[in-house]
Length: 147
Image 1: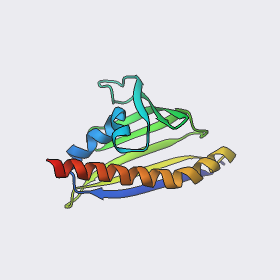
Image 2: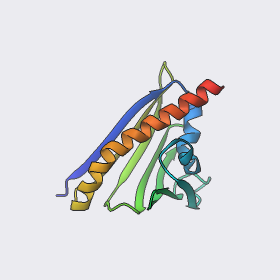
Image 3: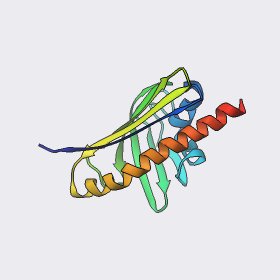
Image 4: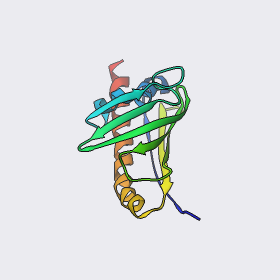
């Protein structure tokens, strides 16, 4: 039996889900608010560029990660897997937006197989994903303050 590794982070923004969702759904916007240098699409998804089946890429330094969107609930949740770029097996991540009285709760989680390289990635993602959530919350707060 293969043991799974897991990383998760959460944050709450004053912005409503309708303001946060465009930041999460459109990978071309990730460099605006996160640590990525470039984001784009290699193939559009079913029904929309950002929908299920979309193949997207993100460059962070010298590493380009290629991901495929697995499932989308517009305005609420996106799930994706890594096709190449980081050495993980059976990677599945989810970003979930939940309306709250204060704005929106953001939950970002990822799981993958526990392999030697997967354990190395785990060490990096334990700080990377919480940083990404903090950046996303800050960007959403800025957008909420501007409106």
